[in-house]
Length: 130
Image (tube, rainbow, N blue to C red; front, top):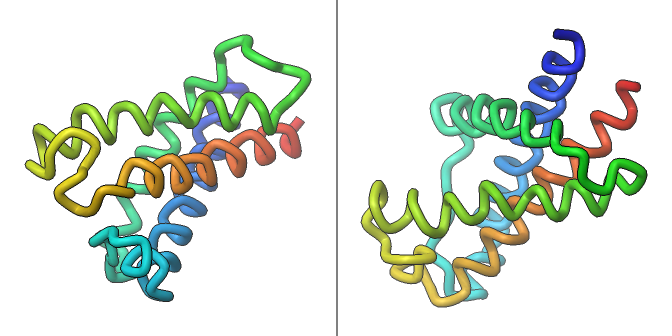
């Protein structure tokens, strides 16, 4: 139970980091410069689901993959929520096309970067908790 709690909490921290990176890229104009129409407003209603889903996704760190290399593990495991975002959320829930390309052609690249931040922060948090 302790391990699941650590994974969830670390995933929540990763979710917060991801949300702040997405927001900062939008607020600073990086997304616009890249031709990606993602510029969320920083609010509790926007942050909360990102943090909770980050925690839920933290459970994938149970996989015994690159256990001695947490940064690599975080980078690789971040591909799982990236795939769901690009192949399920964008096309079927947000109606923005496969990969979210209706938000801009570089949207898949930006989602990779955003979710990489979740994976690395989650992995580092787990390592620090041990």
